[in-house]
Length: 208
Ligand code: AMP
Image (cartoon, rainbow, N blue to C red; front, side):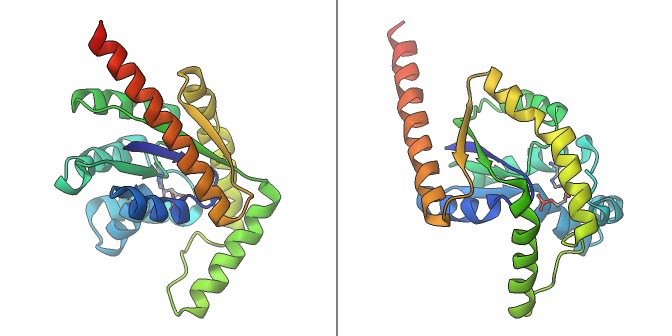
């Protein structure tokens, strides 16, 4: 199973991805997590990304495309993966398509978590409170100013991806405002349908 989770910051992509990892035995490929690890390790990519991320802007496409391509080649991704936070621009989506075709792979589904923007700031504030309570480090971009920039980057650069994947007949939209369990159940339903459709087209192709 190879899928993309789309949705603005605070939509719950990370939470849902972790659940799908458990239920499907696949890996979560979060470009945000990979970039944060690179920043922490002070790699050349990390040094380039650090300030861009803290401001809430997007890291250049070529940088993220290269790290995703390398990550997909790792043995633990062979069984499938969930892309969380990637692609974030139409050029990234095009690069992903070319990259997967090159590797002989294809996506099974693109799932959009649709949320009410007004709720996002509250969700991010809640995440900050929870992390602080657990003694975990708070992300440098989890503050109102950077969140505003992240939301505007989402609107202008990432939201067009819904039309992009809808045009390809791949987009499935789930109500991300429901409870965490309800959202998980809706995603699982969508994946079942995508799997059945994939199986049908595979057997149709075999019959041809
Ligand atoms: P996230 O954890 O997905 O919210 O990502 C945190 C930050 O990492 C973003 O605000 C961007 O600065 C950067 N980032 C993560 N994924 C991407 C991507 N696919 N393209 C560009 N920048 C990204």
